[in-house]
Image (cartoon, rainbow, N blue to C red; front, side, top):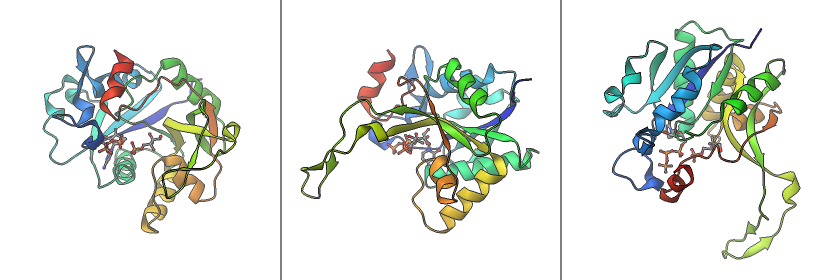
Length: 225
Ligand SMILES: Nc1ccn([C@@H]2O[C@H](COP(=O)(O)OP(=O)(O)OP(=O)(O)O)[C@@H](O)[C@H]2O)c(=O)n1
Ligand SMILES: C[C@](O)(CO)[C@H](O)COP(=O)(O)O
């Protein structure tokens, strides 16, 4: 039997680095908005228990989308940082009746190119994992550690480094507890795995496709055509 799961989509960012006329999740891509492409990958899955989109309080773009009427999608209030938005989404899942032991996948709205094969691989590989994990890609380029003077300080062994992507998959109760504690402690949390690591867990890296890119800067859009 396939593993069922909930999904949280942090979509409350303003897209400062994109320098666009709207939050980047609402930029057009192949005739639709970025976020519609992102949601499509999950809405087509029979294993989906429900999906929460974390939105900014002043988001007047979302109601204009047809998917805003999809009964499988609930809304949660976005927060100051991505981690705050994710925690809000996790709390909404609990309100919707999600169990503490249920699997939750957290995926950036700004990653519209998630391959269904990667989604299936992540869920299949982690379904029986005691901790959970994340899609990630081994670093391909040589890395440089920058010094305060903007010059190369050293060249670390790139064989030890992976780029963290999303979805990241953890059990609801453990993730909510770790994220809430890390934020309360003032820890800078940029992904769900780092909150779980802070709580003492060791998430599993699941190799995924490098084209599951996060649309961050204007040139990123050219990769998706
Ligand atoms: N307070 C925030 C900040 C970000 N996000 C979401 O987290 C994902 C990854 O964040 P990022 O790429 O940094 O998006 P922005 O914060 O919008 O970009 P920027 O940092 O350039 O403003 C995006 O889908 C974004 O909408 C969120 O839900 N809540
Ligand atoms: C969660 C993430 O996409 C993993 O690489 C990344 O940390 C998000 O960072 P951002 O600065 O919030 O885009």
